[in-house]
Image (cartoon, rainbow, N blue to C red; front, side):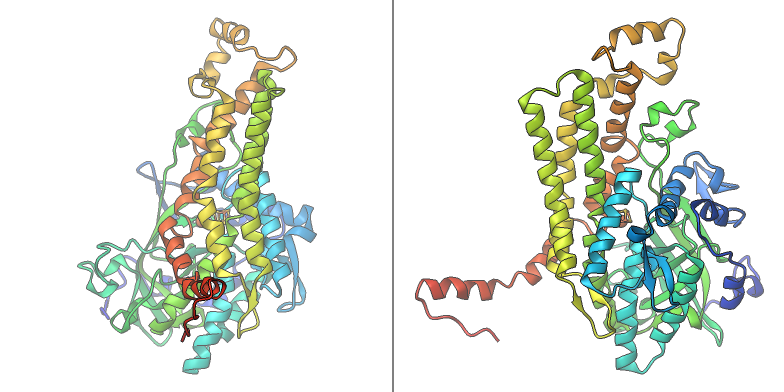
Length: 510
Ligand code: SF4
Ligand code: FE
């Protein structure tokens, strides 16, 4: 453990605000507007395009990502059956994004909500990794307590009650930068490449390091830091789980840019394709950030790190049914542009739409099957079937690419040769474009342009991050799922099925 005696540029008083003081300052959120209001004036350090952003809520590149989370609150108001659930913890209805899973049916309902949110936003709405973190902590804190006699589960439940009451967003701080992949955390030349505890006091502990690719990090109220992989005894100081307010002293956010993001800085909105919603990934640096003991949920129990990651991925890889909502938008956009082009009657067009739908529903079926097959853990919570969750996520690493290819096929090359909104509005160029980009007589040229820009946005532009690359690497890259599938596929048992039918003696499996 590295001892750090100073607290850098901040006073101890600023760093060590008590948990009670934190919650006391918070105004419970009900509506989407409440959520946006809750993000204002937090005085967060966030770099984007080489500048510290004064108020992220008003930044045109950042705001669409906040709108996507806002939509989760709006859905809870508009469709409480879908997006809320009764919490026995506080005996009230709470956001399904903060609800403890009480049955397989709860997980199926979560999947339906995720698909719906994907249809509404056409992007990553950033709230599921936090939900899956809450889910995994229920069982992991319980199991650590059972082994070590600690009190993590009670701390967790106390935090969750306040989280539900205040209807906050929690971000999942899991992925460490990892440095040299051939080395364990304690072997790294720079120990900060994995998050670790640098100091413990009577009040709490201090963590240093960074969390990368944090979905919706800046848009969260709290961040849960947790290990990213299995840990050994020498990595004990890296085995830390804690709840950190997103505006805690010592945090720095550096905003990840996305393809075509500067289109949000142009004066028109048409060329953005989806001007309202976007995703968000941030690098979050923790410079000796204080976590009071009541928010520490693991400290040194390294042997639970692997199991925590495994359970997290069982939940989170089934959460990727979110992409079927985006797939629904892609099918709709492809069908609409074919119609605007006057090609919707062609049999090959219908066949491509069938293929897109088949791929999309295949993702969905593996995700909901994983939820239906959920089993109960010792703490009482239910967890997705891990094999089917991995199959779901693995499908997600592939099928959205093929769905996008087919959408681009149906869109035609105009999608990438279209002039800008400024040209369409120009006194000379505009009428020429109106004349030569006319498709079906009854369809305004602007509608054709908007639909093409949406397909561009989701397959090449800003929300291709959410639909394609995040589908590839979010919740673990394809190889991570193949490792889990290999572990779970039980080939020896299957060999015996074959041996039996072939009248060969079966082998005893220990
Ligand atoms: Fe939710 Fe999907 Fe975004 Fe993950 S990728 S946070 S599951 S919307
Ligand atoms: Fe993700």
